[in-house]
Image (cartoon, rainbow, N blue to C red; front, side, top):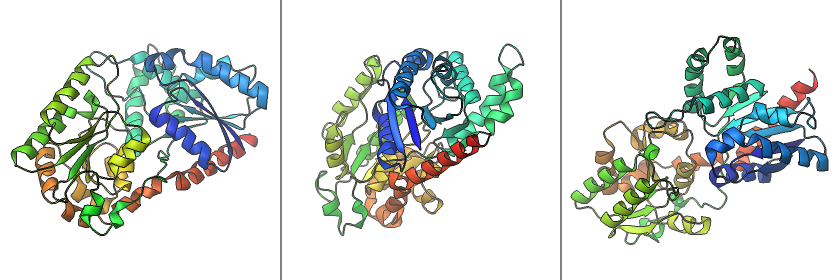
Length: 384
């Protein structure tokens, strides 16, 4: 089977997802895409250049069996622009890494037009895949009211049929270059970067922006410092975008405040990140929004003990036997982080098996799941 994967945001985790599936799939997967910038414009205007890329690919290689389209583009518009070259028998699957209908934004910044483009895309798809049940449930709950809010009632009859096409497929993650340190015999061998075995290293692998709530993280670090506990700190998330001056200033302020604890800070390339990850003991999140959590999967697979909200996608990533150990209730993060720094080796003993459970997201497993579902879609369409 030939799959043409269309990625409007061919950068970062989206690019890793596309190339990871391409490398691991048993099918022929080809990628066309655009660089990861100007996300609002990708959703509004990305269909035209992507349709040109799809058309060029078809002219050179013939028809694909299936289009797999990442959701940051108006798919209805894309298909319309490519209609003269694209066979009506080609299956259309949309993968929603995020959805504008339920993406949290600052008050007054909600973009009804962006959500409408998601909705119109779902209407033309044969299958819509979400990266977590949390994500799919949020969209399913919000969609009926959103459609009722449109200027007339002509869209409402489509809601049930569209929702019936929703399924959950976790993000595949390439974990092949991440060794599982949980099997190492002693703490000192696990903390090669962070220093002495008495100095746990805390990893923050997120963007320094509002939806990840770095302010709550800084407040928790102050509690750890006030408890006179030594710790190392790796701030390894993406640098704030050029337009986020406040986020950049806040991060610089945190780097200054905890300068004595910082092992590494700033956006790291893959090799440097894995080197730093090898010395981290705890990985944390204070996120207000998370549809999946690739960085958490990677860190836990590497042997870090997680400390995560008991909300969002995290109860899906972490299997139930470890919920009480690593998931925290609202308002308790600071206290839980102090406790985790005090007894990180005890927590490691209490989470034996957790790092291995993350391996279920490796592409060596997930590619087969994707392949089989896409085979079923094309087989069904062939009989219509």
